[in-house]
Length: 156
Image 1 (cartoon, rainbow, N blue to C red):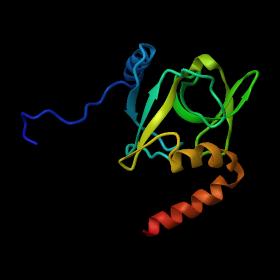
Image 2: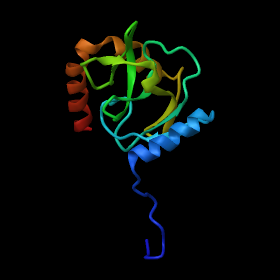
Image 3: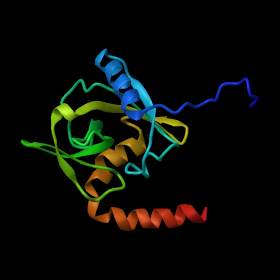
Image 4: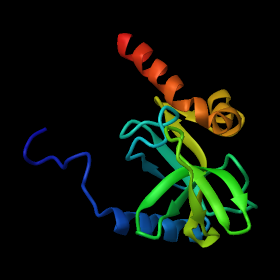
């Protein structure tokens, strides 16, 4: 890259950027963002994969992959583990601790698809359905399985 070329990436304020994306979803658009953080691995990986989301247009259910804002202001993408009268309980695919309750108004995005390892995945694809329907029920087994997965993928 020479001095006259623009960089391919630009650093922006996360809160400002996500606010803009939220506005677009309120207008009916689907938007995308590159994943930051590892709480949803191995399904999606930090700085490698991206999510596509829109404003939820149906009742949310167990296993849904959603984007929400914690009371602290932090933005998070996790799955709905359980729905109770006091709110939604969430967990990341790499986590064993359930977070909640999260109020419905804190949830602003329903993830509709992801780009994982360069491939577009959506509901109905094997890996999407595995994490939504099977992995969500395997919380006690996650740590040993992730450790085994990690040791296998490091050897490759």
